[in-house]
Image (cartoon, rainbow, N blue to C red; front, side, top):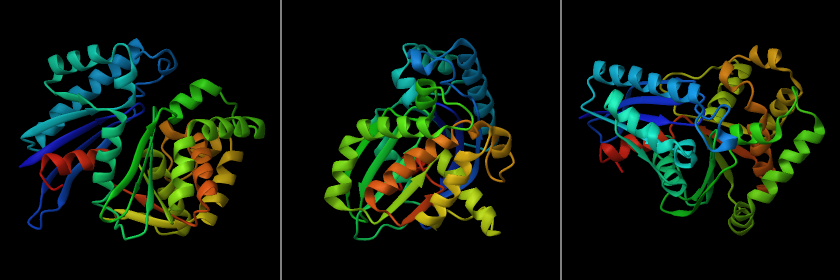
Length: 308
């Protein structure tokens, strides 16, 4: 069986077409993302703006056609932070089903965290020591503490990069005062995470989804390596991350756009993601970070194909 999964994020809609291979693993046949910006101009009001609503429906119609072209026998949509919080989220789900025929399951933050971990486990090996997984979205950030055998803790926090941007309206580039105010806000909102870090001392931070995708590509390009199509992970040191983060935070938008690996639709939020990552790295004294190519949509595909 071949399935198509559509991850309806606050910033991007992501399509994955995959199947189960002979070894019982996920084989990704096709993947792409569209910068729908579903939360733009509305996330602070708890509503999908009219133009964003239309962009979302158009993107789903495109993906429905592509899923059929790839021979997917099952097409599923997964709705996350923006759809579960917007007052017109249910209307969007209904209109999407009527127009494109795609059923959308709007999941809770807790379900989202578990599904992300199901995806990350397909890409990154977990050992006996606790590892912290971080998935940065536009509406929310999910954290999971896990070993190779167990999920120890998970929580979703509504502090995604689009929410932060609309709340703080930062200048470009960010000023030091703005960085400190955003960091203080995260410190306050992420209290349960700091408790778990103090208790379990995870030795590595595993990052998935958009901001980490961009970060990994930038680091790989600066190493002169690039990331091959079949690579599912990339490791780098906290020192590499901090040096790059400091540079990016001082750049203006035009300079950021010249960074190989950073797509235009992430140029306005990458700095906010870097602040969030830095708070976690500092709190845990973490020295190693690993990027995971797989995240929510791969977790959903693995479930649909009965791999997990």
